[in-house]
Length: 126
Length: 216
Image (tube, rainbow over the protein chains, first blue to last red):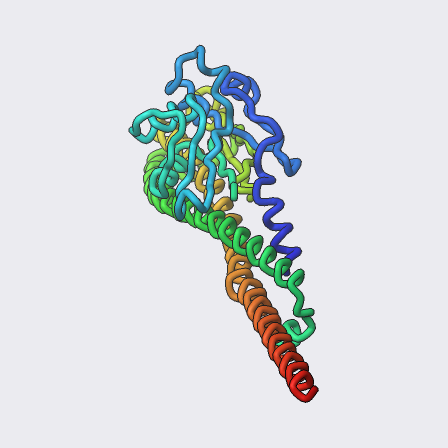
């Protein structure tokens, strides 16, 4: 049973991309390769929404997918967003104050995921 | 469980090893619980969206059907069927996949479903404007049905993953961690017992040596 659990933990973050791409790159080709070998496609409607939230000069710097870091130490269901531009986008969407690092709670994450389901991704840390 | 405990060697090394395993299992449990919470959030979010979308799609379908019935009454059933056979039945739909915490779900996006009058293929001279209206309503609802199909497949797969993760969390919480804890308790108890044994033995030896001294 322990082996199964260890295997499960090992593939907890296997859905993350091999390399994050910029919004500009995503607008040209919305597909990224994942660590587990799969392909993830960003929805064009979500990329269009991101375009409206940031000035064109920042399109190159915003890396996608935006990672929501889930760690038990943040509390049950809470996640962290890191990065200036990532936080800027999330703050604008959720009507929160911008910061370099943001802690989002369950209802906020639910709202964020409902609006940006393909350009955000969970990332588990211990 | 008793069998597993009795086969353990009650040593300090084993105790340290077991404590490390408990720590790992606890960490794994916390992480999988986080994943389960996130999956549940996705599941509920999808369920909410599906409920709204289904309601909207059914309302729109009903409206489209009513338009079609009106058209049939006006143009005649045969003529409407004829026009439908003449029309082009191609719709551009993009099917790709996305990942939600490792669960691969399809994305179905209607690229080009709404068509112009001339693109539909049936004769505009012999058909009524009611047919155009019905066709455009059906085209509108088709893109909604694509979205609904995507969400329903996503919720089915997430539900399955949720069940699998819950099984793992329960196995850790109710089987593995308690088993490891009872093994730690058993070894601690045995080590304490052995320590007490040694202490009593040393006291006995000391008493015997002292008695021997006295006899001399």
